[in-house]
Each structure stands twice: as C-alpha cells, then as structure tokens.
Image 1 (tube, helix red, strand yellow):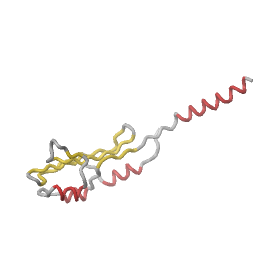
Image 2 (cartoon, rainbow, N blue to C red; image 1 turned 120 degrees about the vertical axis):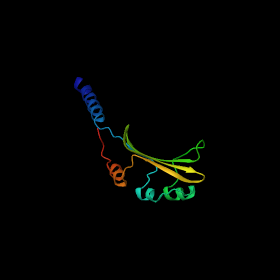
Image 3 (cartoon, one colour; image 1 turned 90 degrees about the vertical axis):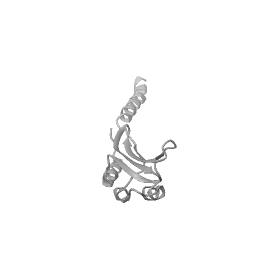
Image 4 (cartoon, helix red, strand yellow; image 1 turned 180 degrees about the vertical axis):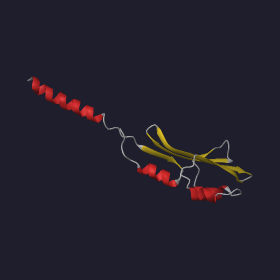
Length: 121
C-alpha cells in the first residue's frame, strides 16, 4: 500500500524538478531599427516628411517638443538588454538641424542578436 502512494509522489517530484531546469527567456525587440545606410542619407535641411520617408515613423513624437523625433531601438532577453540605440532628430524652422546617435550597432549585430534564440537556463 505504501509503494502505491510513493510512485505518484515520486513522479510529481521528478516533473517539478525538471520544470525548474529549463527557463526560457523571450527575446523582445522594440522600436525602430534605423539602418546605417538610411541614416547616412539623412541631411540637415530635410523636411519632416522627407525624414519620415527615409527613417519611418518615429517611436516617440512629443507634443511638448514637436521639434524633436526619437527613434528608439532595443533588443532585450528577460531583464538583460542586448542592444539599445536612440537616434534623435532635431528640427528648427521646419527642417533638420542636427541628429544625435547613441550607441550605434551595425545591422549585422542586431540580426545576429535576433538570430540567437537558444534557450538559456
């Protein structure tokens, strides 16, 4: 009788132990990936319509600062940030005045990071 109860408990404990061994962290990609060749075409004096055609719709367009567009790109696995980039376009008098680019990864770096989907545990 005792052996009859021991078997289900043993199976349950084995399943519980194995479930904790494999933790899969989802890779999350957010924002706009600004390609280096597109960014190289961006010039001072361009209109907002030209910038939007070239880089796409910005992730952040503030009502408080309409003369600033932020293109933010982030790849994150769990709580670990693998890649992060922010391209900020500043407009003055309706045309591009300057561009700031923080931590520019290459397109191949981002693609390699996205391709690395192996579970880690």
